[in-house]
Each structure stands twice: as C-alpha cells, then as structure tokens.
Image 1 (cartoon, rainbow, N blue to C red):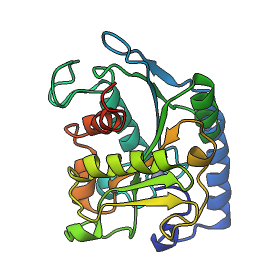
Image 2: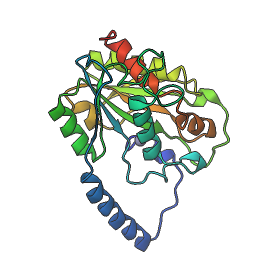
Image 3: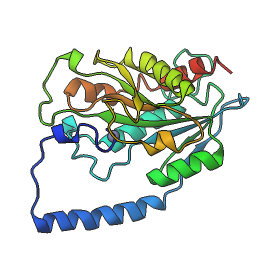
Amino acid sequence: MFNGFSRHQISRTTGTFIAGTATLIATMFYIYADSAKADLNYEQYGNWNGYKVYLSPARHSNAGGRGECKGKNENTMAFNVALRATSGSYYNGQPNRTASGRNLRARGYKVRIGNGTLRSAIANSNAWGADLHIPIHSNADIAEQCNRTSANSFGTLTIHYNNSSRGLAFANKLRELIGSSSPGTRDTTCKNPGHPCTAINLGELRETNAVAAYVEAEYHTWNRGVSWLENPSWPWRIGYAVDSFLNYP
Ligand SMILES: [Zn+2]
C-alpha cells in the first residue's frame, strides 16, 4: 500500500504519547540505517537485450502493522517478489532461458533492486538510466478480517503517471498478467494524481525518468491474498509483462 491510500480504513488504536515517541525514534534510526544500504545489482544471463529494469519494493516504516494477515510484513513480501522476479524461476530457482516462467535476467535484462530510501530509489533509477521503474507493494483495506473470501473485493491494482501514455500501457500489461494469477478478481489500473483511487502524488511515478508503473500485486488484508503474495510461482509474471510491453527485445 502506498502512503495515504485507504489508510483511514485500517483500524488502529492510537498509542500513548510515550509509545509514540519511542516509535518515532525507532523510525528515525530505521531510516538512517536504511539509507546506508546499497541497491542490489544483477546482470542478465547471456546476452544483454539493451534494457534496464529498476524494481523498488515497499519500504514502509510501519510494515508489519499495516493490516498484513498471517503475521507477515508488506516490505518483506515485496522484497521477496522483487528477488523472485529477478532471479527466481517458476519451480526451482534455477536460471532457465527457455522456460515460459523465466525471470528477468533469463529474459536478458539488467536489474536493480532498490534497497535504500524512497529518495535513493528515485535518484538511483535516474542515475542508472533505468528504462522501466516498478514500485512493488501489496494493498490494504480493512485490518483483522483475514478470513474473508469474497474474491471480487480484492485484486491487482496498477498505477501510472497521468500524462504518460507509455506508463498507462505498461500499467495495463502488468495488471493483466499479474492480475490473472492473483486470487482477487477486481483488477484495476488507475492514473496518478487525480484519479479517485490515488489521492496523493506519487514521486516514483512523477520524478522517475523511466516508464513507470506502480504494482499493488494483491491485498494483504485477506489470507488468500497473503498466501499468494508469498508463493514463488508467480513473480516471473513481472518479467513476462516487461517483455510483452517491450515486444521481447
Ligand atoms: Zn505499500
């Protein structure tokens, strides 16, 4: 979930002033420590196809307290999705240049995974010259109702910058090819800013030079959603969408 989206729908009790102060200090240390982490860089297997893909997994300071079912953590799940999209393969984690479920490296892409702050992700994506920039998140609506089974209440949401026609096309491709795997059936694409589903202006869409599309792969506020987010059998679809958008360079 990006900051500000549906936050009001997550029921949270407010801590005491002292607890709040402790959280703030812990958050400051977290950000300080986090900013020192370098991005992860990966080379393609075999010949480079000429394209660079920047994956930017969620880095919420309150991950684990964002309504995630099964005791999971949005940041960790998103980071694992990025790793699997980059280097995993459909079944056994081995690079396979011919499997339909092959990863980004096996498709010939150089990949960078943002491992620092939001600011460093934007700056590094631009300095590196990424062709595609993909923030990876999971969505949230209501906390502590994990046993819900109404698939049409959940699904994949992708978001593009509102003046980017290529961003729209890329967001649609990601929604189509990830959404067809995720258990929720309410798959949508929306623009940012200015569309009802995204009230705030997202810097990773607005300030990145690459064609950018934001992925809320599925809701983490139902058990089926979390089980799917944790399953290594689908993140290759990010590479599938990239390849499909670029016409298999
Ligand atoms: Zn998020």
